[in-house]
Each structure stands twice: as C-alpha cells, then as structure tokens.
Image (cartoon, rainbow over all chains, first blue to last red; front, side, top):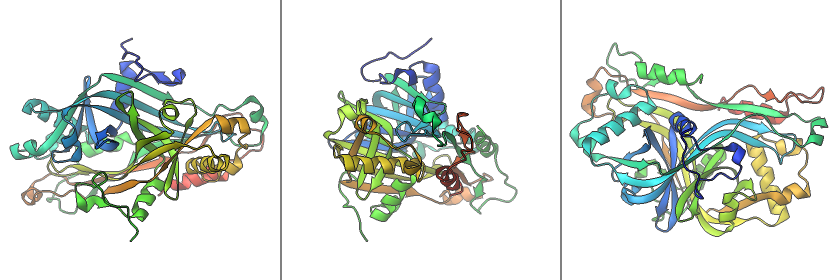
Length: 219
Length: 219
C-alpha cells in the first residue's frame, strides 16, 4: 500500500483510527470544500478557512493576493492544512463515551506562492471546479489582470495522516443494561435549490455545474 | 455596541465583511459544532479539529487527557480557535468573482488545563449539551475516574473577529450581459434519522436530546 511516512509530527495517538495511505488521505481531501490553514503570524498561531484543491501531491490554496495569508506565506513557511468532515453525532449511554463520527486529514508542508502562469491557471481551474464541477469552462474566462491579482499558494504534502471514526457508541459493558438510548445521528452537508441573482439574461438555465453540485447532497 | 478590540492580530482585511461585536462572534461560535484549533507543535503549526463549548468569554475544548493536544497545551501557550460555517456556493458569471458564503470566527487566547473539578464538570456538561441539547442529564453520570481522565482546556477570548459573506455574486457590470448563470447554491448541515445501536433496553425511545438535534436541521 502506498502510504505517507509515519513521523513524530503526523502520528495519530489512537492508532485504530489512523490511516496513512494516500488513497484514504486523498479521498478525504477531495471530499472537503473548506480547509483550515494554520501558520504563524506575529508570534501567534493563525488558522484561516480557505477553499482549495488537490493536484497529485500538491494542495493549492486560493486567496486574494493582498490577503494576510498571501503576505505571511508564499515564502516557504511551514503550514498545516486540516480538512474535517463531520459524519455523525455519537450518543453513548454515558457522557464519557459520547463522541462524533468524522473523517479528518492533517497535512504539513511548506507554502510557496505560485508564479508560473500555467500552474496558476491550472490551480485556479481546479479550485473553481471543486466548488462547482465544470464551472471554469462555463464561466467568463479569467483575464490577465484578474489572473495577476489572484494569489495562489502551493503546498507540497510533506507529512499527512487521516483520522477516521465510524460506527456506533462503545459503552462500558454494564451500561448496556441502562434504559438510555445509544446510537448515532448522521450528519450530512446538503445543497439546496439554487437561487439565481435575478439578473440573468433571458433564456439562461441552471447550468450543468449546479446540477452536479446538487447531486453531491445525496452522497 | 459591545465589541472586541480591533488589533493588528484580528483585523480583517475586507472591512465590509468584518464584525467585532460580541453578539455576532458569540452567535457564530454557538452555531458551530467543530472548532479548528491551531498551536505550535515541534516547531510546526498544528491544526486539530475539536468539539467545544462557550461559556461567557471562555471557550472549552475537549479531548482525552493523553492526547497530543492536552500534552502540548494547558501550559498557557497561545492558540488560535477558528470556527467556520459554510452557507453557500456563490457562482459569479466570471470565475474571478466566484466565492462562497460563510460565517467564521477567529479567536486568539492562551490555553490552560482546567483543574478545578467544578469548572471541569460544568465545561463537560456544556460540551456534551452542545452536541445534543440536554444529553448530560439523560446520560449515565460521569464518575470520578472518568472525570479525572478527561482533559478539558480553557481558552479565555483575548482577541476575536468574525468574517461573514452573504448574498449573491458581485459581477463586473459588463458581465451581466453574458448568457451565464449567476447565483447561490445554499449549503446546509442536516441531521438524519437517528440510528440506534441495536442494543437498547426494551421500551427505550428516542430521547428529547435527539429530537432537539433533528430540529436543528431546518435551521
């Protein structure tokens, strides 16, 4: 199995919940829409939500060029990128064993500003299509000025680990005799009916990209 | 209006999207289920998803006592706690103006291990009830051993800022003439029908806490 090296940095404490294989890590990264990006800023840790895309072993982060992030980063600084998908609330018979089901990935690497125009365009295509599949080709093309003013950060995955919890509560043996409900409430992200902005040119219909988004809801 | 001080650390670049008032910040914190907690670990930034609760101006984070987090923290180290709620995908006519609607809060403060048993019990009650309202009283009581082995971290809010984007796409004037769809696809977190673990004592019904969770879906 093709895996990331287990290091002091990415080792997950509860090993039965850990996964280091690329397939699991990539699948979670490709399922998320928002990443939480951690870096140091003015001697404080800083965590900022960003949209992103993965191409192979590189994550691309998108933000306006003037943003704090692009200023602080893009110089090879170490970053942590975490993606978390909440799948369920786990209600055990005891408060102690209550938990949540989730899939998460923690990635570490170094942030670099993407300067190559081709790489930048490719990254922006992927980020746009992550939000709405095929949207890049539907939308009005990005012009040179826009391309220049858009900051893209690349982070090559140096360390990565996934952590996954699935299934029902695990109660203490004696607690199963208690008249207390135990189980899971599944959590899902859904996409509701699209709302156009009231300024459509006549005859413009809901595009394929939006239909693709709506199909995601049902998992 | 009661607000957090605007500092170099928490100042949001796009000021029209920023909010520093406690009401907005608290509302977003109280709406989230998972926080992304950033801190320094082995000279790297680290971002870990955690469940949490707010009591007044303090955030409480929950994790097993042996966890990396509790080891690294609890000694007054600076942390960043970010909560992000994704509300919509914003499809502009141009890829450049495409965006997402969201509510996020970034909090900075110092992490301390909670040692006072009363504060710890109160924090665990709140964290448990955040996942499922009223669950603390429904569930089997936490015993002393469990209370001791559960790590709770408190972070008093030193700096905080909210960032919120709402509404439709904002396209360039000339792009409104293009035959391209523009609008928002709303995103929601929903809670599905509860699945018991098949080990219920006869006659045990879905509890009030689960009914409360299900009512959240409709927002």
